[in-house]
Amino acid sequence: MVQLAAQVDELRAGGSRVEAVLPDSGSEHLFGKNAMDLSLRRPLPGPVTRAGRCWVSGWRRSGADPDRASGSVCDDHPVTAVERPSMPSEPALEMLWEAADPRDALMTRFGFPAGAAAGRWVATALAERWGVRVDSCERIVMSGHNALAWVGTPGARLIAKWSVVPERFPRLAGLARLLVWLEGRGLPVSAPVATPEGHHQVELDGASVGVQREVAGDLLDTTDEREVRAAGAVLARLHAALAVYPEADRIPGVAGRSAGLTDELTGWLDAVPDHVPAAARDALRRLVAEAPGEPLPVQLVHGDFRSANVLCVGPAVAAVLDFEEARLDHRVVELARSAVLLGTRFRDWGPVSAEVRTWFLDGYASVSPLTPTEAAWWDALVAWHSVAMMPRDGDPTGWGPAALAQLSEPWSQLSS
Image 1 (cartoon, rainbow, N blue to C red):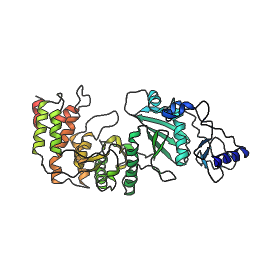
Image 2 (image 1 turned 60 degrees about the vertical axis):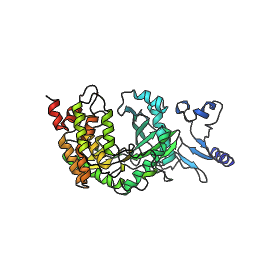
Image 3 (image 1 turned 180 degrees about the vertical axis):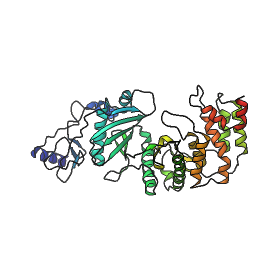
Image 4 (image 1 turned 90 degrees about the vertical axis):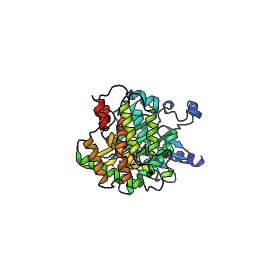
């Protein structure tokens, strides 16, 4: 505290205005259980003092580098000129897939009364922890208790992603390490940007925050054969890398399989809802009974490989996104699931054709052909994932017919 007081005196002597932010007589309610509730905090007047370090923002000294971050640490060296983040307009607020009011979600889930407040918080986080000045925050997209902010900086456009679910923080840190490792092996992923201290995921203000560079590209177009084949090939490369990732057991929440495929599918069929036609259930049981019983290797997989998470530039895959569903599974199970769900996006949950699934499988096999045991399971797994997508009420995108088409013998019975 003595060192901090001396620094404050030095700043004041040099003409800077230094104000205390916490604690004061109006801030008692911010301690204890309310300490991380952002909605209770008043805007910061300028510099913030914390744990012997002084953060100064809001002023510029002559000769300052305009590309410096919007905050400087005053320890044993002079304060460098900085600028307060300036965002003249409100960022657009969106929900990724939920039918919810984004303004209500921003307040009730994240504690921000408006988009501008969230944008300022993101700008401060990037300035203080990453040393990056944010010039604009154009868009904030929310999904569950996760949010993404698209921001402009002097160097590049970045995406800040944060979660406010504390029990997920260790998993997010583990996934950040995984992405850095995959990028180092030449895989097309969007790896997090490190802080000056080398951290890829940072906890602050009750949130876990990561920053990524914006990747140019369009979501995978399943009508483009070249893109679909390229996606299959990239998934094969990704599986090969994930199979040898040395820290898979250090990622929290990556659960292993508790049963073999035969037992799992049989158990699922025993509990399948009544809206799935009996002929479809019987046909799937026959496919499962005909599949080989020998065990398949289990490895780390992506968990949600589909159009919504694959960016392409021309016929090439630019990036595979969103590893938050990563888990331990058989690679052929993920391959079959991805083939069935390949065309799904955030609000467009329609099936792809058998031809598209063939393109995808061929692309995968061009890098890593299936083993005889995996190939023997293929039809059953594709049929299983197809039947699992059949909706209980209404079917505007045709999941039912697509599932029944996988079961050619029952299909003629059910359509008669």
